Image (tube, rainbow, N blue to C red; front, side, top):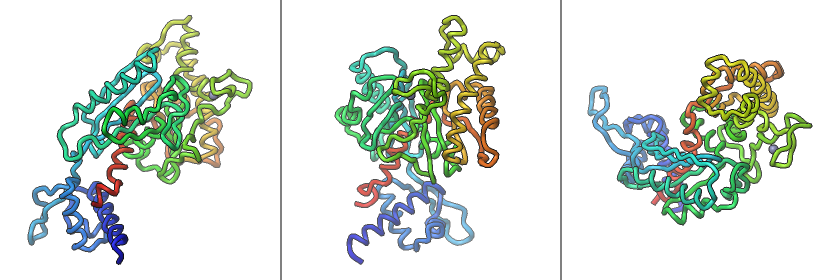
Length: 389
Ligand SMILES: [Zn+2]
């Protein structure tokens, strides 16, 4: 075998062994050999390399079937830590996780009407604060993943943010200049979908749609367990599909866009108008729903109707096995999900059944930041320099 091929094969074995340990640990070398179909000598050699690289550790003893008790291998989830950031229109959420996705620290920072200069320094300050909470580890901070509301292209450039001016800033360079870590940028919905796929509501789905509902509607499509990104990386902007062809004018240039009717912002704007311009927070809305306020119940019917119209279009287009909704408003109020499901079932073709369900997010407000941080972990573990030097 040529040297290059030998290296290739060694690296492949290491990847298979590491991913099997991550899924099944604590695990013995014998069991590892059985599960990976690699011979015992290869397993032994490559696990030793992984131990030297601090990615795997040995612990105590396993249950023996007579004979010598096997030493068990565990994934060293504390070999390094990853930072995840969600950059929303009105907040920055920054988290620190270990290599298995467990959260060690999080920071939520809300703002209104700040200049771009101020926002850039807030972003750097918040990340610095969170990095300071990382324990000592062999690899330290392995990177920063950022999920941004808006269009992020295949070169990780933010090309359009509908509710702020982050498209004027090269966030990747900004962060790479300030921190000595790799940075990965993606759309917040893609990051959220990746998070829910790894740890949450769509873990067992192959073809799913993730929808984040906030100031606008963000969407990510997973096809055969992979994010569908489109040819420029900006797929999934279904918030701007027309659901009222003569409807309201949208900032995107279109008319009657879905997010003008079925985003949280649209919901609160309409409700506030009915309530004579009263400012309405999520907490106030939750309370009104609990008290069966007639106005808010009417608005929920309308919201569910518009949401369901758009969702039916998506189901007809993609035939997903499940859909996950990320929204503070919907997550807090099951009655809204009920209203959406009613609208969908009134419209959906009997020939296109949803195999599973329309779920709400299991990761809630951490979905995008967890997904963004996990993009970095995936990159770190797949990085040939880590597994093969
Ligand atoms: Zn639009």
